[in-house]
Length: 407
Image 1 (cartoon, rainbow, N blue to C red):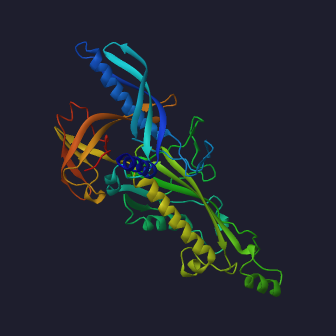
Image 2: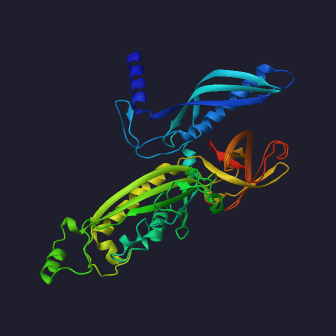
Image 3: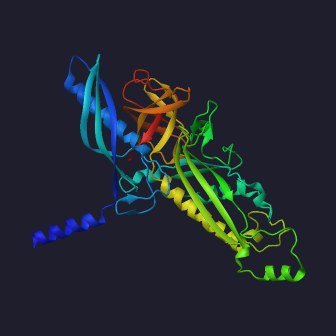
């Protein structure tokens, strides 16, 4: 009887366990050799490589579609990071001067929910919603809906108010897309291509959302006048006709506000009947607009985007910038408005800037293994202390703190 009960409990645990995705990663680590102690240096180098593998897991591709027969069909590109490192295998190791280097192969397990760390959902990540320019502005002429470019992201930001783990900012008048036809890819001066967002750090948000409205066309567009009165009357009365269908196709881009890297790209499509007179200047977001079937479809799309952004961002690691250091004190640009409390502990990451062959800057985060314990928390800033001195740890302004575990 006892063995049967034990087996039942095991089966229940197996079938109720949350799915965890294991990402195979190779990474390098290094550590200083102190007093000739190779064993301790090797151990520290492996720990450093494990941390690098965890951060490197932010480059894996995930999907919202199901896996069928072992084949993954790409739907949405997404980046996650800071997973649990398992099955570490040292595949190479070498010494250079007083530094010990290792290269490891490991599996990084990433849980898609907050159940592994419920506190992450309590910390509010800042999300800036910016302008969604029209790829074909003339398609908004019917009904005079051109204001959709800033009103749509503003409505999405408004819908996110109160969402767990998210602090939305309405920057819908700020346009980050210079070429809607090629976004998010843009051509650099030297001819290279990039998906990174330049100037992202100026917005002071952990995540930045931009987009492009690709299509607002009518299924069967008409001219300014119908051929005759009877045809005009018939077409307006035939509300169910496909000739009244109007499309809305939106490409949404989510960027890391600290590095400008593209984290996620999604496409949304909907269509609804638009039966207002062709010459009427209805306007986006008016009462008449929402009464249209097309307006109701847009409203449903806003709700879908709200849920997707909440699910995607609320459980991501909380990050904030270091704004000032003095001796063992460190100040950050986040506080009680983001859910921080006195006594919370955050890990400090050093941000290094590198340059590629075309002198394009990109960032690397290095875990200092220094913990910041918050002592004073105000609405938009917090101050804490570390063990040791910030100068000796080389902790500087614009380095980052990350909440990997909370409370």
